[in-house]
Length: 152
Image (cartoon, rainbow, N blue to C red):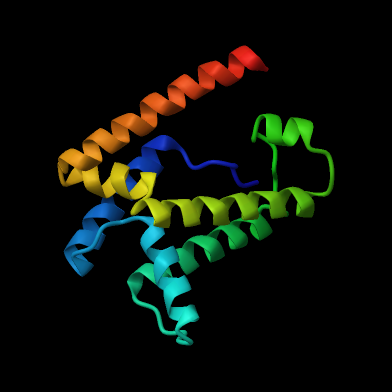
């Protein structure tokens, strides 16, 4: 039986090594928005040849799919109010999550970056803008969690 989540003491160092590898191998920042932009831009131009950022996105999507298949299918438990309040097939809930992911990707592209890129690569490079952005993400998340808890 596969665990639903990788242990923090394995995932954290693995992500750190990925940040270092991206900088050393490609002189690039680890972040999914770059891959999203790469894939959308190349496909829009009629090309299906991607650089490492596009393959990173494809790898994340395929890796998640393979894990779900090996684990016996998708498991949408643990998404709080989403799985508690939405009733329906796992496919319908999956489509909602997919749509939300696409919207998040579009918003991150429109904003010029994503939380993962700022939090992982930007802070490791000690970028002042990334440090401020990451602190803002965390403070906002904490405040919103308290507001949601008070309302619900």
